[in-house]
Length: 362
Ligand code: NAD
Image (cartoon, rainbow, N blue to C red; front, side, top):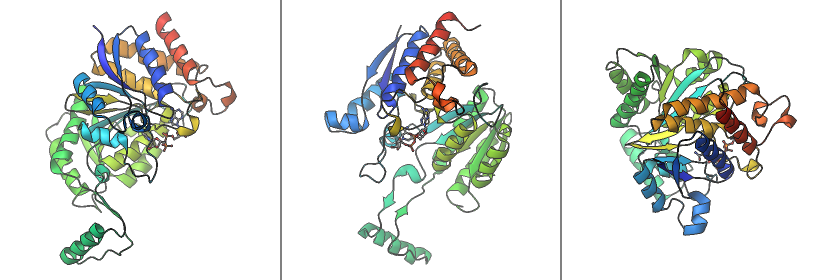
């Protein structure tokens, strides 16, 4: 039986890395029936819509998607298609594992952290009030009347909305993941000392949920302290659970600890639907150059195979990728900081991983 999976190539370097990922997936011997669909600027040119209904219908039907990165122009009219997709499918949990593979040029060894990021709430809800807009003036008036705090007329406002139910759902997800994957500790990250009603609520709920999982250690950290501790001694952390914005920042930080965005996989999950994608974006300056590292998306494919119940093939693919990294020959520029001229391209990395898969690696 073939798995029917929605495949979104994305833009920028997206088509190159998704093609490399598709090739290695097929080389595992697992059969896929791809439903290829476009979102973002490419889709807009074709159909007039940035996020066509057909994409949502396909993902809802197949329940699994593999997605390349999609560009969000800074300051332009439209908000991120990536955020819109997560909102539309209610993909409330973003899981981003970061581990050091031997041979990766990094300051750290033995890092194995999973960042669980809340994906629906917080400042990413897109509830914003533009400077000078009549609605903003009205909101400033309400705040002045109810709180006695003044907001100057040249202010833009973004709402940080965090709910009890949303917090409970993501913290439970993190603990269930920790239990399911035999992890020992969950660290909740917040800034509850300053934002008492949003981050404070998240922390209170996290503490409550932690009591339901006595077999898993629980601790919490302020996000600023967490950044410092991650840089100083990342090995002390296991599963991190946090709100949307901090999760976005911390998952890039953790990617940096283990060799960079070229090695950071991810998945967005919710209500029986999973969209697998790398942490990195569309890296437009490298688009079409066969240059960037496809391993982040390949490692997302490892997560996808595990999700599909193909554990053995997931392990084989991860081992093949790890071997190519350890050999250090057929890797992209980001894994060869001392000698970038000897790096290979995106598709050659796929060739090397496929070769490892086909000859066996033991
Ligand atoms: P980016 O992740 O695209 O790139 C930042 C830098 O990281 C690149 O210039 C490159 O040096 C490096 N890099 C990224 N991916 C790499 C890879 N696979 N191999 C080697 N090096 C890699 O971040 P950005 O420049 O901030 O964002 C570019 C666009 O991507 C923006 O429009 C942003 O909104 C979008 N974006 C999309 C997603 C997504 O689709 N999920 C995620 C993040 C950013």
